[in-house]
Length: 176
Image (cartoon, rainbow, N blue to C red):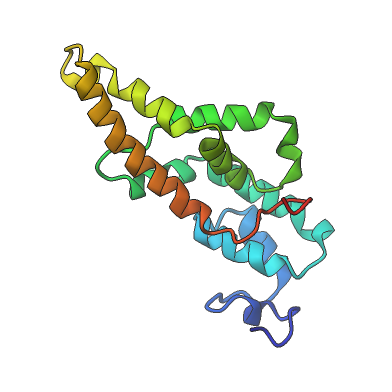
């Protein structure tokens, strides 16, 4: 546990940054660009005045999602059946259209929870599995579509769940 929450180097073990300004600069310049790195800074910032850190966090999460870093990390977790970019695009669109999106500064968390809550994995796994291009131009049987969809669902769901485990509590302004 930390002795002094204002000492950011203690708040985040292993981080070489020593103060809030350096962390904010690292977010704004995209020197940190993985979920784990941004999440680590987000945890440190939980001790600080939200008015000072919300904008750089919001910007960093948006950049992370929109620059394909989220897709790349999801695909790193789904080596057998690469995560669907169409699925991610639909989730991003749904978050943008959702009036409840203002409850969090964390676009990544909003996108991942939208994927989970709207069951987008199942929808897109079946869409992918039914494409003749997945079967060398042939129209697949229902049984084959079911088989391919099932393995995509398993792998993609595991990846989304693994990424969502980075948050013990929802990063929201309301706490839920």
